[in-house]
Length: 158
Image 1 (cartoon, rainbow, N blue to C red):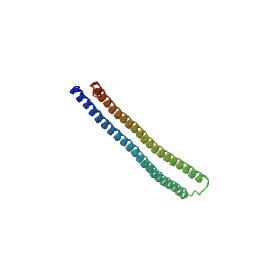
Image 2 (image 1 turned 120 degrees about the horizontal axis):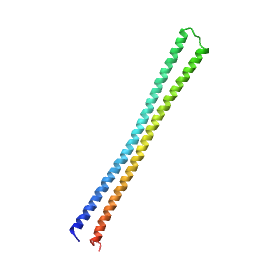
Image 3 (image 1 turned 180 degrees about the vertical axis):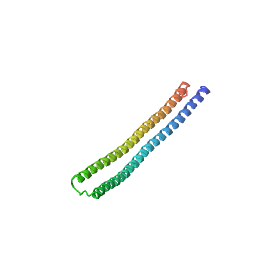
Image 4 (image 1 turned 45 degrees about the vertical axis):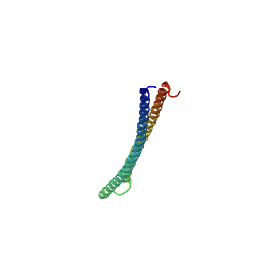
């Protein structure tokens, strides 16, 4: 049994263990990154929803002011309520309602997209972590096979 074979087998075994540890650590880090990406996307989605709610509140306030100004202007010109004034005010409310609905739907859509991006990042990261774990196991098994192959060839098991 040659010294070179023993040294080679030991080096191969040590290298396999080191590779396993490194790839396992990388897999753990990848899982952490995947979870962080999903958490960050959720935080962004919540922030987007809050921004949309604030924008909706501001829009409602602005729309209320516009309607009050238009009623005041109509009153200042001597227009009485009813008839065409009511039609104009109803149309303005209808337009304002559509603006508000669009704002709320676009905000919801933005938050949904952020959440889906987080879910995709999470799934991708977890798949990569799984792949790294498989590679780590493969390295360890390959190193063990190489070690035992060399040992068998050198007659260590006889």
